[in-house]
Length: 232
Image (cartoon, rainbow, N blue to C red; front, side):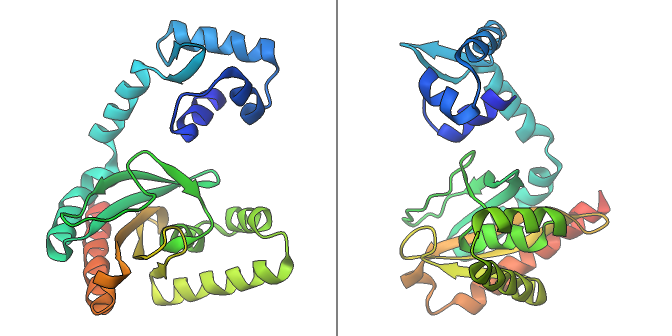
């Protein structure tokens, strides 16, 4: 599982040396596990490079088919995309990363780091901050200690996260991608358990004069998704 997780985060084929460094596994252990993963088609090898295999794609398709979050969110994502004409995404927290699990591209051009299946550190940007703000306290404290060794910076980020919780959403611009503005709203299962966040992203020049409108649209879509999730 560690090898598959690392392969997924590379976003490209990786060689054995890269996998050894990323996993901390000994060479013999790594090759033994890779042989097992190849046998079951979880990993594909070509020219001494390794990538997720066809069974990994089947798992991805299965996730898309049965995921409660994406199932309930998709109609509201389509509504938000049509109403805003901007990029809309669902992102979840996986260990120390924010992973995009569903995305609708804007009909207008936008260059941003998020795409379905890609992960980014849980640090900067509206999406990461919103996830951090609503994670359980022990998990959030550990992540903040890892990302912000300096106590002053850590306390400043903690104050930002408290503000996000108070207003119910996070906004940012240019923190991950230059010139991109974003707003993110949390999504919950019953019992106020964080499942992920709904995010809208747009070039700052398009969003500058309509940020309140885009925030309200995103919050309205998130509220309807939460209602669907609560209803089962």
